[in-house]
Image 1 (cartoon, rainbow, N blue to C red):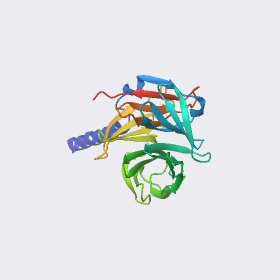
Image 2 (cartoon, one colour; image 1 turned 135 degrees about the vertical axis):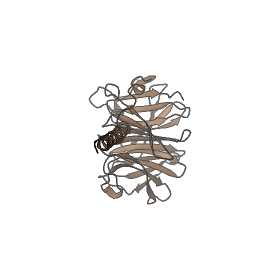
Image 3 (cartoon, rainbow, N blue to C red; image 1 turned 45 degrees about the horizontal axis):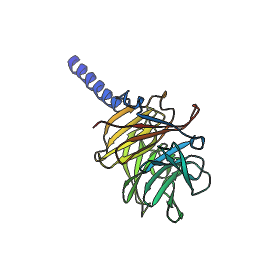
Image 4 (cartoon, helix red, strand yellow; image 1 turned 90 degrees about the horizontal axis):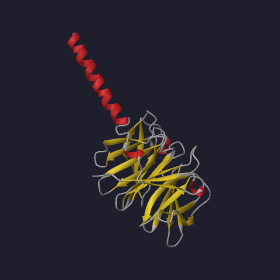
Length: 266
């Protein structure tokens, strides 16, 4: 009996260790040494989302203004902007030519046609209780939406942090795509789908982590630390066409917002 009890304890400890290693940091070095760094202008102090636009330009939103800002990483400045709506809590942006998709914390999606400047507004099946924080393209017909707040549709509680797939043509066709474990301060703040490597990047600002998910199984492949001394408030993430990873940080308690570049060696 004592041997069986001892083995049971070891088994439970192994399971717990496995879960914790999944949810906590498994790499404490990669995202501490950016290859490049940009100090962003004051109009991007509250940068909350970004998406790759073209060769040298990243399109950004902040969580106060209804503007899309185009930041040129070579010229190190905002080169133009698009006004698309009233001031509001805008948290995510993604792009599929010629449309920009911008979402606010209550789940209202703004679809901006950059050619005609027309704006369509669509309420997705989320509420302020969901506290929407991340948005990215999944494929030509679908978006991924990451929730910082309650994980269920229409603001319902759930025992996980939810990431949903939204059909652009029929937004009510919204289904749960991925989950992260609830607790340990996990709270998605940015998301990006890497089509080439079939991986989903999920920033978690409060727990200072980046989760790398297998897009087919949904399993967490790797978990990276985002130390506060570098990443004061990581809110936006995107990849360039050549695989560079860009992470933006709101100003927070620092003097300026920052943009960092990293590259995986695969």
